Length: 191
Length: 191
DNA sequence: ACCTGAACACCGTTCAAGT
DNA sequence: ACCTGAACACCGTTCAAGT
Image 1 (spheres, helix red, strand yellow):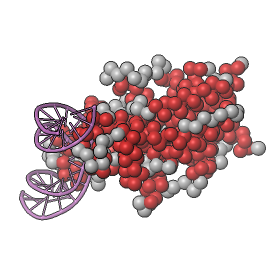
Image 2 (cartoon, rainbow over the protein chains, first blue to last red; image 1 turned 90 degrees about the horizontal axis):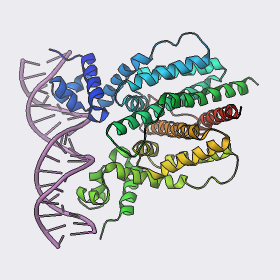
Image 3 (cartoon, rainbow over the protein chains, first blue to last red; image 1 turned 90 degrees about the vertical axis):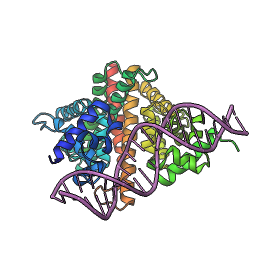
Image 4 (cartoon, rainbow over the protein chains, first blue to last red; image 1 turned 60 degrees about the horizontal axis):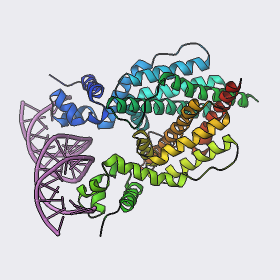
């Protein structure tokens, strides 16, 4: 039967989870779907666009509304959900990082926008709120990509790089740094 | 004549600067050096190791001692020099990011260690100082990779993503967030 | 509209064999 | 010690042609 976009994206996510981003190739995906590689190019302009769609799928779990609460709490809950979503797929952080940089993930852009709102609510100037949001997202993606690659080196039995003993605590620590910094900036903006 | 490691790394850096990281392949590098691709594997175990050596070359410019001064000033000067070094080579941030994650860049590890020292000097607990240093490096690499890819999309005439109007100022802003956050944490640690 | 088949121009890495 | 040549097992993408 016919190939549909959501099926393709789901198959891609399965390869990602089982074998990692290095093995997520157009040719391999086509093989798994029993179509010729060129068939994929009817549905997606190129590989980046396909990866962007997979990134959106990964981020779906992180896109719930943070609801009410202090701006600190909203930023924290968005970031924790983001990290959880990334960790629940092999190489999730690397995939989303690349898709955000390439401008191919709507969901990633939405998360940046939501964090910018929270920063603005803290009292940061709207222009700077976008910068602050990007800073926070860079932190979450960088930290989680690092964490994920440590996990993989460890699983592969490598000795070079040690995994963190308490990744969750380490994540909170860095996030606190940024939230505290935002609070300081917000006070400066008022005066 | 014979092939020497520094020549190989220099040739790789030239390809990087002129064509970007996507075109920096073992085969292309071999072609440029007039050797067969397999010759490179006598000098380097694999591509990651070679990229790590190129990353060290890129970072050489950022490895000067920050000298005396307040911990805030030392962190800021290390980060500014790091960003300058990354910006002075095409895809510099992406290259160093990958090499740091793969544990293949001595220079990148040194910079993390130096930032950790400064955080410890601020009064952060030694264990947390390493976390703080990683957070700062993730920020610099994430911000600069973002900045560099915006520059490239712009140079390629793409419309999707706009480049920052004042990247230097944007960079300082994020850095200030982190330094302020560190100051807050340092006060908490004292009490 | 949707897909195949074949082609183009590539990859990283290994390894026997040469000098 | 250092390098070549050939091979293995792959890539992303295009495009005429088929149904």
